[in-house]
Figure 1 (tube, rainbow, N blue to C red):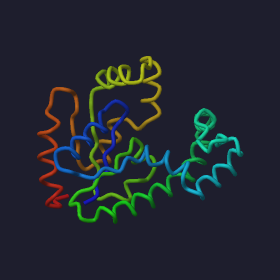
Figure 2 (figure 1 turned 60 degrees about the vertical axis):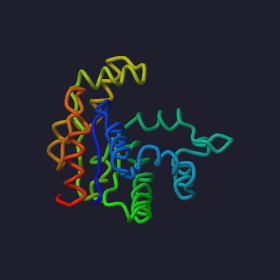
Figure 3 (figure 1 turned 90 degrees about the horizontal axis):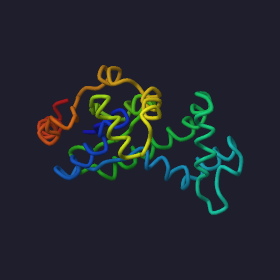
Figure 4 (figure 1 turned 30 degrees about the vertical axis):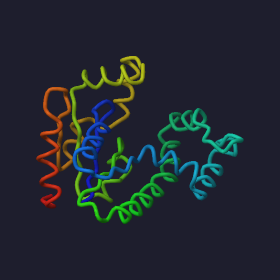
Length: 197
């Protein structure tokens, strides 16, 4: 059973994934972390990024030139689409290989903030949307990233809304600091492990 977990910035999807791993030993594939690794390690991805952005996309030490990439990504939706067209298919392939390596696990998780936007719903059996009130999310991100409310709201605007994610997801989990995440995960895991999706 392959479960995609997504949610807006500050919703706590990483915490939910962490608890699933802690409580039930569920293996978690973190798309964001793995994408960054593949942009450095994968020869075809490196070659394509150099062709798109020039040799300065990598530092002399071989690390990704993050300011350059960020500037390019945020300059236009077309630029972001160009980078995504290079990175996303490779991440998908990498995830599918990772799934094979974790075939003994009854449930595996793919964590992605942009699960629907990147088309990753195609490689999972079901999606869990992690939800939290906007004000709670702003507080969390402000504490974590030292970002202003305006910056956080701008990042939220760039993502799907909670309502859009809720319509596309098969499961929902409320992470508002009041409802018990562990109780919700217990009920969900029982269903997933029995493949009742």
